Image 1 (tube, rainbow, N blue to C red):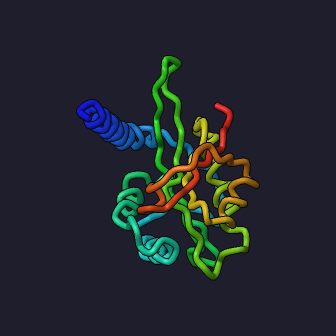
Image 2: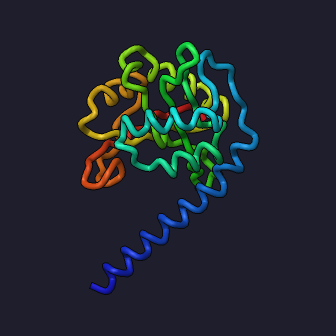
Length: 190
């Protein structure tokens, strides 16, 4: 029993260290970020947050709004908003996940949250937002893009698969308490 408790503590401590490294190194990597010109897609700013939070609440029952606000401030260069006639149609927020190996630093990005407003769904905004932001990820040497999606969100899963994402794992409690989700990955050339 004691070794199980120690193992759980070790895994928990390791996860905490990884989060701290991500939170420290991720913003540092953003300082040299190269932006691309994207039609109707811009980086988030303070004036857009109320509408982004409304879309997020509509899609996810208002979960994690404080984290979304934090990402909008710390990682605004990789927090994208897509517009339609000056109205915010949706958003996609990433964070960087550095991985260290014997070969050095490998940069991955994770889609923290993505949502399209209800009246803009099914019109290609999600696909365009992903395509354009992923082009920018490639330009900046990102090796792969990860995301988490609820196993019951069939429309999103189909979109991600059409774009080349593959299911790499099934997990619980990441998309929400007692919810099952897929971890999907799009490998990029790096």
